[in-house]
Length: 132
Image 1 (cartoon, one colour):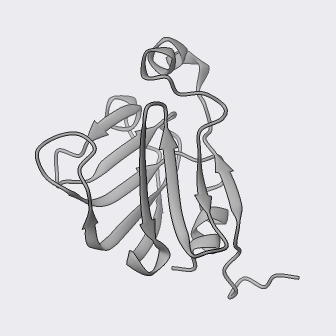
Image 2: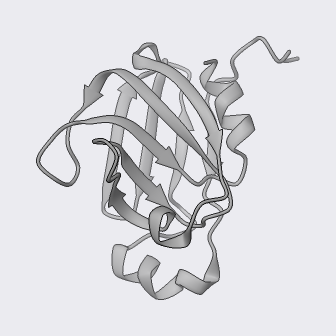
């Protein structure tokens, strides 16, 4: 049994795919198989088509559920204009911003990433699973 104060482990959080952007998802190779995983061995793994990021859960500083956003700021594989954050976005309704103590290696752009925003179907559940 799990309480809200106890992090879940070995959980998969799929993205909430908005079919309006299906052509973009095909171009990025994003599918129903992509997800954010919180593993039993204390790691966070996010896959998004041909790209992925992985970091220890101990590297997660905090999380914040955000949204809705404008579609052009939230859908696709993108960098934040405000900072060096990375987006794995499949809808503009809601997602989870995951901020890191130490930046994760760059996926796109020229700098490593201090945050990752993921538009999973259950951002609150992912935040609980991460435990931050």
